[in-house]
Image (tube, rainbow, N blue to C red):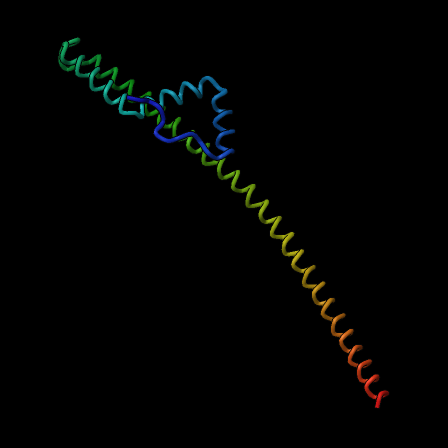
Length: 151
């Protein structure tokens, strides 16, 4: 029984930086550990054993007032940790979205540069074409003049 996360480590550099910053805070590390354990099958097995022993060993009589209170407090804390986990997931999504936005802005700048270079290449191509036509016209004019003087 393991309480390690079921997914591997974060591969995205922005997420790795975020997780490193998050791990610097003791409260975040505690919350992450509790959330990881509470979301595991180990927690389910511990709860089953705990409740089974409580009832089987007759720690208290039916209707199990203390056990009911313990379970209620557990539910309150677990719901809080679920919200913490959701907030953590939202933070991760925001980090990825911010990183993606930076990439989009960089790509837009690159696209603008490429469009400008394409326009410059087009203008140069037109200029070269115009010069080639001019030179070709001059070459034909000189060729005709030489052909007439030779006759």
